[in-house]
Image (cartoon, rainbow, N blue to C red):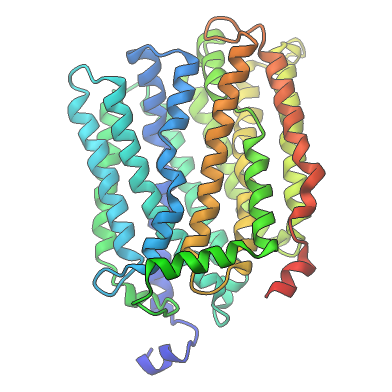
Length: 439
């Protein structure tokens, strides 16, 4: 395709579409595969560092703090160009930071690494992941705003990256569950670190001009970008949607650390079963992306998100029955329940992101795609952190520890009730007609 044709904004040719899919496919695949080293981190902390369930959950949520800074990374990537590029260099920087942190953990963990040192390098890893995710999300958002890109405007690119992330998650959990009993955590860390090095090399080999991204002024300042982001957030349909979406996560007290200890310490569930459970959940996520792309794109976002939220609450009530032993009395083995129901519940939390991200991409004003999508994911990250801290507080209040799970059924019941609450204010999400008017 000629430069003249690009300037007219015609649909990118097959070659350029191929480069977009290679870059985003690798990026989102690695993003999904991050569950591989994190499974090792959980067992390393429990078995080697000997942390309790509350400490594990606090660390799991605290190291996600770099995710909250995504709006800053988004504004910088929108406004600051590196060698005339403002997406690909940031993906490369993110991959480099992650590789450096995981490989450093491998070196330091040969001796007695402290939990503080480990946390610092996990923070650095998540910082790199955040920077790369912001750049990747911005590319998807930019293509979603391209009027002449049929695949983007129809949501096919969003579904493609969703499925790429899901495939990475499937392989990461499958290999992680098998590797945790056969290899040391350090071996898993070094494998993932080398994979990130490969992503870095692939990324720097892709020139940004080959992606045919919508052109914006390269001299836009950070102050101007912040002003545009502020203007976008002042639009009621955007502000209310993001507020509701973040609150729908933050209000739910997460009990991930407690359930991890319950399954491994109390029920003595093998690591391979937990890996299979996560694989099952990722397969369901992959199917969700396919079903959404084929059949649910025309469904109003509000209806779809409400249905997912209600389904989450139902699954949490099912967890109450599981912990009380009802399913066991019915002849359902604990391992089967964990693989199927726990696997699905874990990924249900993320089902809302696909329709919501497509909605926000359409509502987003041109020029601040990166910063607005970053703000959305930052709000979600902060909501998950708040949710995790609420879960620790709830478990502590009800006396749930790594050795005493008598208060767990009540904790899960409170969790389910909190999940239902956002449904009463779901009108904050614009329906299809509102979405059309903003376009």
